[in-house]
Length: 372
Image (cartoon, rainbow, N blue to C red; front, side, top):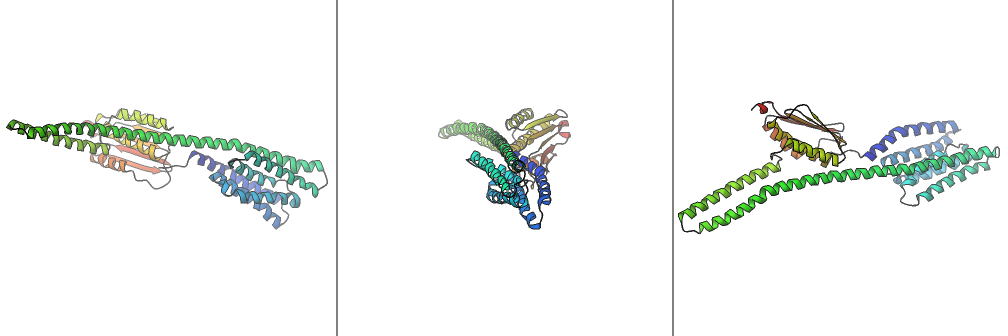
């Protein structure tokens, strides 16, 4: 499961809120100032370039379209000043500059100053074609455009810093989730070591003892060697069964301990957890529900980018819901597939659903288990 990062969600929200506003304001400006179809085409090109730049900024790759958008809007501004007599067209080059400049790797302050100077110098050329009301022209075509440009570009620098912080938090959250998964793997490795390490050591000792007894001369030594070999066979068979149970998450678990472990792992990964206990879990159902909780916790930490998890417990069921599902076909989760067979073998049902960013895992066991 994978979801859109928080930074992408914020940019998409900006796109939804402000792109229609840019389109409406641009259309009104073109309709108000254009006196012919070709003037409308030129002014419209500036509006379109601004919207394209904003769209790519919202997608996080504004630098790919920076140069053509800057060229178009920078060319529309002197055209509007000298030909159309519109002071509103500066907003295109100011907006494009505000999206692009904070993303530059260096010389951002110099680029911002150059943009403000360009807007002001081009605006001042209005005096070449209009000699009336010089203070009014300077105010309308120089002071206001330069002031707005400085403010807009200046606001985008802290905006860029905000997105950087969000991105760092996302990366930290992913690292926490990876660490949580690593801790789960270490715990699994520890369980495997506990099962096989002790067994192999005992087998080694018993094999050495049996070898010595086989070389003995008495019937008692031979019978003792046979007994040691039988114990080795039983021990190996038991270890194989325990290893298989561990591999399929069927080793005996404590639901309360798993619940506390899941809560700690989610909180470490920055995921809010809510636990609802509708009833005390039956002792017979506790182990299998604990296995479902452990496997689901691992899946959420490894495959999702959840922000909230809700765990609901009843006497014979558990439901885990998280908001980190992708809007895509349900992924293959082998651990849950193995658990589904185990739950079905006990007469229960394991449900896995994915819908509109929500992923649900629910296991229900028959009530007869608690009555047996």
